[in-house]
Image (cartoon, rainbow, N blue to C red):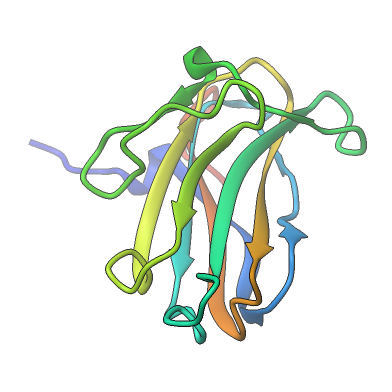
Length: 153
């Protein structure tokens, strides 16, 4: 049996590893030519996680037709959750938040979320609350089910 996943996916760096202290949006990823995308959010240790009030990061997906005007993804039918390395709940129907990291048991972890909406572009927005301090993070998108294979880097 042939085990070639390399020809069927494309990885796109949306946020290179960096220390984050405030709310930010990742770069948008163009989904043209692909029929699936997973976002990998690698969150390091929240510097001030033991402070009161408790520091946190929340994450949501946004979608766009033109890579300039983005709207929150609030429809649970457009988001895939529930794997061992993903949030366990659907996005909040009003805010789109699908993940909140607010304890030492939740930071220093890799999270995975899938987007199955019909817009051309998608991105991740991270919102800081209560001064989380320098938190190392990176975000990448893994595009799959390409219309043409093998995929180009």
